[in-house]
Length: 231
Image 1 (cartoon, rainbow, N blue to C red):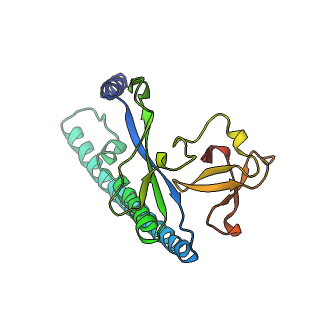
Image 2 (cartoon, one colour):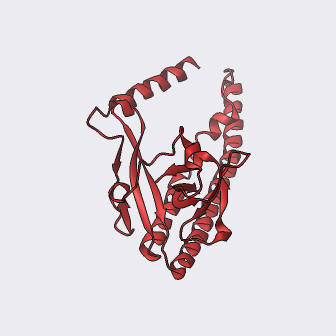
Image 3 (cartoon, rainbow, N blue to C red):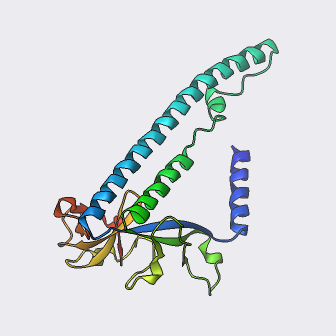
């Protein structure tokens, strides 16, 4: 346990020495035409199918890993017993040796969706690089957020080029002031940000009613404040 803690602290120190860590966040502005919005719906369906496929692949991998780990553990126990050595490992130690993380598959789903949304349907994909760790090492002149480079297949623009745009992180304070009728905001949905308008006062359960710009009233919903950010 102490060794693991030491390794974790060493890794954190190493990462902090490398400077700030950034990630790219995306906002989505849907096309204005009915045909474009229908196209976006098809893109969303394709992304859902892609995500389901990734999940199934990961579940299959984990099932195979458990089966192999059980076999490896039995062989380990037999070997340790024959050599009269203590049995220090568990089945989980062998299971963890099989990498079943499928982040690259999910990343591909999101990339294909952005290509479809911006490059095929005519929407706009707004990319922003956001500092997520060790941001205090940026220096006084370095901004906490810089525009991400555009992807070749997407209709991608930096958020700073749009009038009225602000930072790419959802606010943690002052969110209540965003939930005012007529306020123009962005709402997070399935990992992406969409322009929306607040349609009423904050509800008793703390949620905020919004209407997504470019979409019909059937898509209106009430969302938690941590899914809202200003435009």
